[in-house]
Every structure is written in structure tokens, then in C-alpha cells.
Image (cartoon, rainbow, N blue to C red):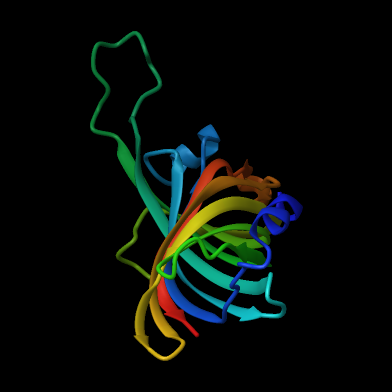
Length: 208
């Protein structure tokens, strides 16, 4: 994909340095994710920086953080023949994730204000899962906490919209859509959760 882009765009490529604030979403269709959230997407907030190493290419690196949680109800009986369960009890779940990504980005200067691009990135993730039947007590002895590491990739196409401030400095909203995949995140005795599917990033930053 990058080779095709270079062939079509030369010599109009215009990779640039960047600093951006962004929101991200990563596919989360694994049913295990239902323990920590409703929906099929891991939403996150983060920062991204880029450095132009060639007229064609910028190296980019980013960090994304996400916090998800849910309340899980536990009936006071396992007698499914009864018409109603009792009041039962509940516990809180939480999943905190941090993603670190490194990759490349190549853009095409279609207009001064519009630069389509493609990007391919390697992504590492640290996840911390927590189960707690009393979230109001920070020293709750029954709280269970497990952490794990995993990795994968993100490939996407996007659009930079450049608004000139002065000289070669621009404010640039952007959006990118693509596919992401992570190996299963192993959380010891709490099992695994895997992230994959429709993914992307959107944000605003400075290009210079």
C-alpha cells in the first residue's frame, strides 16, 4: 500500500512533524470484554507525535489510555426453576489499558488544506483488570487485581485537514479508519480478552 501511494504521489508527498491530542477506538468483539463494558469498542484518549524523516515518510509514536468498568449482578440462588431470583449481590469490574504505538505515516498533498495518508503501526498494550465487591473501600481485602501484556498492529487510511496559522505551522484536525489486531491479553486466573476489528483514531494537532 505504501509503495503504491509513493508511486502515485511523487513528488507531491508532504510528510511533516506533528504533535496531536487524539481519541481512539479499537475493535473489542470478544465476549470476554462484556465483563468490563457494554459495546464492541475499546475507546481511549491519548497523544501522538511525529517526526518527518524523509519527504515521503514521518515516523509516529503515540500513547492511548482507556478505563472501562461494569457492575455484575450475582443472584442469591442458582435455582433457575424459581420464578424470581432473590436480591443477590453485585461486584464492580474495571479494566485499565495503556497502548504504546510506533509506526510510519505517508501523506499526499492533494490540496494545501487536504492531505490523505496511510499509516501502519505496531501496538503494545498493558492491561490491568480489577474485581471488587466494595469499590468504596480502597483497602478491601477481597479485591482481585491482575495485569498482563500483549501486542499487535494497526493499519489505517486517514485525512489531515490543514489550517494555516503562519509560515509552515498548521492546525490539523484528522481522522483515520482501519483494522487493528491484538494477541489475547492474558490476565492470569481471570482469563483472557482479545481486541481486534474496526479501529481508528481522530484528533487535532499542530503540523510544522
